[in-house]
Length: 101
Image 1 (cartoon, rainbow, N blue to C red):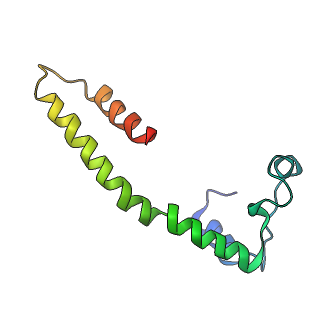
Image 2 (image 1 turned 180 degrees about the horizontal axis):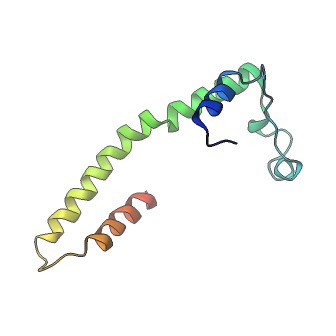
């Protein structure tokens, strides 16, 4: 695991050629040896592509953007009835609402 974007990019590009996926034994005991995360090669790439299609940034952006806009509008409308607004608390409410979804 690395916070260096160049190293992370290289690791992903060289996956299965220069680097091997490995999980600690304690992790494997919890998930089991036949877990989907232990898949290698073409199966691993296929599973990753499916997951990214469902939960990747582009699909999440399309789904969540509508919810974020709706929540922000509702919160801003509710401010019209109030004499003053604590923006920090209001922002927390919107964030908590979105995280629950």
